[in-house]
Amino acid sequence: MTAPRYDVIAIGNAVVDVIASCDDELIEELGLNRGGMTLIDADGATSLYAAMGQAREVSGGSAANTLAGASLLGLQCAFVGQVCDDQLGEVFTHDMRATGIDFDTAPLKGDPPTGRCLIFVTPDGERTMNTFLGAGQFLPASALDEELIASGAILYLEGYLWDPEEPRKAMRRAIEVARNAGRKIAFTASESFVIDRHGGDFRAMIEDGVIDILFVNESELATLTGEDDFDTGLAAIAGKVPVLVATRSEKGAVAIANGERAEVAAEPIGKVVDTTGAGDQFAAGFLSGHAKGESLDKCLKRGAIAAAEVISHYGPRPEVDMKALMAEKLGG
Image (cartoon, rainbow, N blue to C red):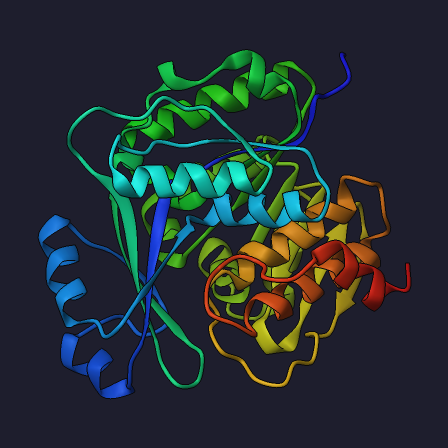
């Protein structure tokens, strides 16, 4: 097996987040799924955008956010995702490359446009996401650079992109390529509704030993296992994946690896401003330690620090020197 060129290669939605503050009444008035993520069509995106207050645009997408955090923590990263040859596509491409990530997937010419996620943030920091996937759902297997996929120590996949057929085929092919090259597969379940639709696929991958590192939150774990009790849910999966990471918002997170269990409390912060990207950055922090062979405890601590940083401001990506923050918090 050749030495990997990249620490992490991710395949995910290429999405630009449009973020605006709002009150709880607007969430109710618009009939939105408070605190969740809902897929919308182009017309829905247009009408919700019209209902938003003053907004800011930042590149997002779950796996892309994780990769941005991992890159800022010193990992060598590459991204595979589909944008359109339009203004938001240029914004996304610029932001990825400016973060030090290799991103060379050819853009689509013409419709559909680059995906966008309209995010309403209530005063408690909770984010309600409404996503038009746009070009992202048309990532074909032919867009994969298989030499690139084989060159990453970890292939990181997001559950959100499992929903549309073309990128699902692309990710299945990428899994084959990565496993044939002796690489690890990391998978984030993304959202309970994705598990409702594709849980059979996810459970089969877990049973078949395809997934090496699985990221879930508490509700996703319950949906995936059918177990409402958190520890019972952990036990149902822990022996089937080498590394299981389960986040619990303000209750911290748990990881189980080869029979070893570790827990971390949520990192204290002054105020939760926006929870967008919390799970994505937790994964980035965890992977930044895992890629260096650090202990399970330290990997979890890195995740908690990264998640706390991103929920202290608007937007899904870090806004401070993450290497310096980790050194300060971890003592070197």
